[in-house]
Amino acid sequence: MEEAQFGDYVEIHLGKTIYEGILLESPESGIVLLKLDNGYNIGFNKKDIVKIKIIEKFKENKKKFEIKQDKNKPNVALIATGGTIVNRYDSKTGAVHPLSTPEDLFKFYPEILDTINIAKIEMPFMKASEDMDAKDWKDIAKLCEKYLLDGNISGIIITHGTDTLHYTSAALSFFIRNLNKPIVLTYSQRSGDRASSDANLNLQCAALAAVSDIAEVMLVGHGTSNDDFCYAMPGTKVRKMHSSRRDAFKVINSKPFAKIFPDKIEIISNYTRRNEKAKHFIDSKFEEKIALIKVYPGQDPEILDYYLKKGYKGIVLEGTGLGHVPTNARKSWIKSIKNLIDNNVFVVMTSQTLYGRVNSHVYTNLRLLDSTGVIWAEDMLPETAFVKLGWVLGHKDWARDKEIVKEKMLENFAWEISERLGEE
Image (tube, rainbow, N blue to C red; front, side):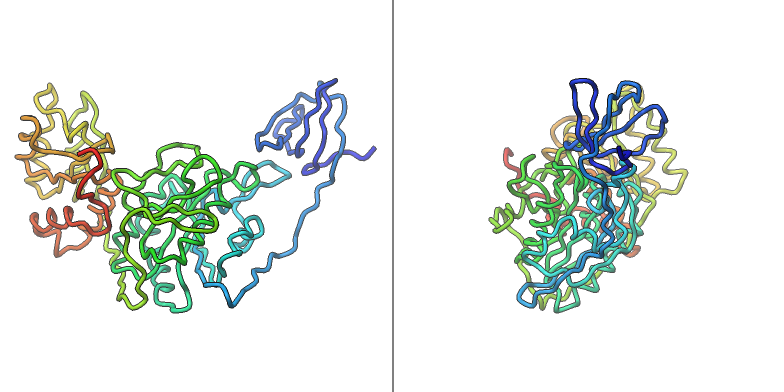
């Protein structure tokens, strides 16, 4: 009988119990690993296995996938930057690896080509999103500029890891001014080898968003845990709210631009309309000496002194509730915050509740904090405020004037501040 090899689809017999799946390489000689049809791996002790029956031999497909162009479909540029969506399962090892070429993405998800042509593909880098920083945001913005200037390209799709996707979407929202066509960021929470992968629907919906009338930086992803529709979400008002659910991203203190099905778009809220004649420009100045600090009970304010000594230019605080910090506590923050501001370090207040807005007038403690010169960031998400502060302080002519910095932080550039919240 032929011996099973890694990558073969097999049955593993444990007496009367039979498991089916793909045979994987194992790091331990006495263990046999199997990838089940539901995407999960299971290990067996070799001595417990009665037999391994081959159902289908592994066949490696080395044929290059060809992206066909249809002159009747609109053209879209795709920028692949990394993350689960551009990873594939290795049937021999059970590990997940980046695709060798961006074209391979459409081998796994060909449905995106039903409505658009992928006319241009860029792969500036392959990074997990937690490894990205402001330089990467600038590089992506620069690539976007190339295709915003291209009259043959209807829109841009950016594939990206999920963990810091909302930082990138906020950065592009500020970096790219007067946008003339859609820029759509999308993702996958689960790799393409899993039956529960969210990549296919996300890409189909991203394709429709990219050729729509919505000239915004938006994040497109599952609206529910089912494969029924996606939301097109404002780049500055969205946040990852679950570590693994397919509908991990939610719009906070606002509404999605649209609800997107594989074959149609339903508009939900206001947006900037596509205008090919709009004179867009890239403004990606960014000050990296900024910090985002979460406030917690009993926290020592000496952490603020550390950032002052290190030459930081600005700090965003995630205060409690309406924007509180320890005030009349044993370790009060008021003196340290005042010292930061007196030394030309800008302090911006957001709320770790996420929903709702900060308010400097409700309690005496808040009024005392307000007297230090803190900038109250309305209902801005902490991550969005962090990115915006770096962008504002990157403009040295603005950063020299405290009033201008405050004015710019409270100017609504890209829907980051909601005029009115639902329950106010």
